[in-house]
Image (cartoon, rainbow, N blue to C red; front, side):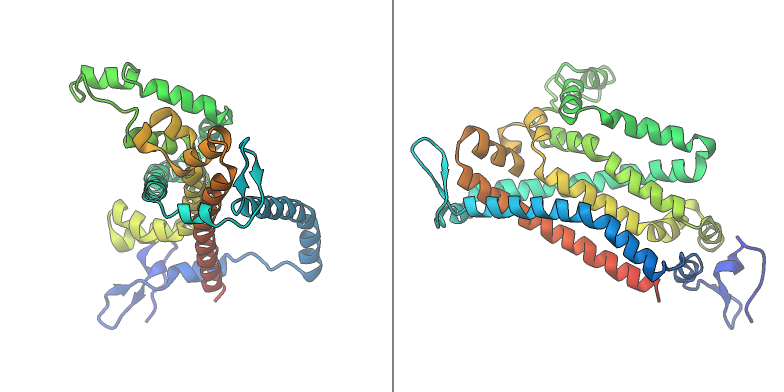
Length: 324
């Protein structure tokens, strides 16, 4: 027999089995159906379609035109003055198989993926605390996180490189408490590059997670505390699944720009920490080899498009499950 008690108790999210032991139902799907917003009318849907059409056309035309131009240059050559010339040369694409370029691509993938994971670990407790426990200070705390990122990205990376330098305040403090030696370095290491990437893009993880937790039904957390006991298990089995769409969006928003970033590796890395963005910048602005730079750009775009399509496919699958 189903139990009926007040909302927030274990019975709200559990059914009684034959032996009297509670078993959790599919609470997520039930609450999703209950809180599902009403579907817009046909006229409203057409209105929003027309409103989004100009911006969509504008962005699509320039994106496709620039992408086709870069693709065409990747098959070209350079003249004696270093100017690009269109052609049908496949040497630039074959050069991507060079071990040096392959190692840089793998390093960039590793740095971007690790940056996304670290940002996720940092952003979850921050977003959780602001969304569910900040009260009237929510807007002020969000502003305190977002406003510093209004400064130019290059300026922020330069300031971060000063903080992490060999004579910077961080290493001086660590040496004073005995956690770092006189030869300990952060700059010109992979750790320094990842630290810069995390600092630069962590806000892109906090905002989607905060928005997802704001929309989450808090009665799920109350029921989870009755079912799972401790706050850690409730967080892992209730909060994380309920906010996985926000986490997925944040992972994409961090991974995509981190993959192509070159400022962090330039300021906080050395020759052994360059990323694919540094190679592209070098080929276009210093090496005067636009065709090879275009080929590297196309390889980077292919990786980013695979990640984006994977995210969109997962999102459509989650939306289909929520509508059932």
